[in-house]
Length: 310
Image 1 (cartoon, rainbow, N blue to C red):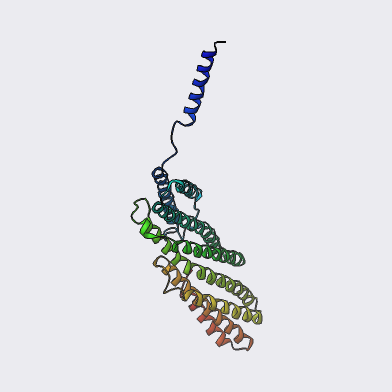
Image 2 (cartoon, rainbow, N blue to C red):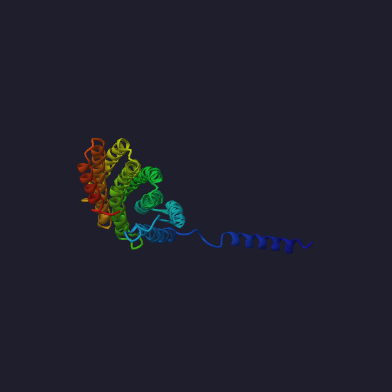
């Protein structure tokens, strides 16, 4: 073997391998920050798209189906790039990194909230549908489940609020890639919705409880079982009173997009409360042999029911 030729070819091969392994330097600090900011921008745009599904035009159309996997992917990319940038960052640059990391954490917590809220909203929507189809027991079960889920969503919103408190706006607002004001608006909007939506669901659950007794009272009344009818109507009136009070309290604080719905539900719960009371009185009058009063109370019940419609 030609030893000189062998050594030359061997060292040449080593050089090729070395060059292949080190042909480019690791991404610079600026490159990593730019990549992180681009990922944050993508996450914000996707987050806003999903949050828009909770606008008033969509709230009456059934459950809300949000897609959040892409948001988490973008946020993971941003977090990885920011973490990698720390190794070559100066003290001032570390402050910038921390500000971006806190922003990523906020976006993640807000996304977690939207995920749980969408589930709770869909459950509530199913409960409202059960009411409209007169499946009142199913409505109670579904609305109670929704209320629990929405309570969990509210807890997650509190976590997101804590994350918001960690934000250094002065470090973020000069960056075109960061949509602080836009995300803040979404954050404020969902806080307003949550403050009303949970008691609204609670009120609708009480309404459903009342409708169960109201239906039973009507059946007993038609069957001339007036003692049973009176008991059921008075129980229904109590539940409707709770529903009416709960809903009425939300009228002044409800976001504009929800005000009309709250007012209509308040009217309906008050109307059927009054109807239940009049029918209970009619049942009692019949038991006492006072047909004239019974007829008057029954007429008042009909007038009460006609005041509003669900």
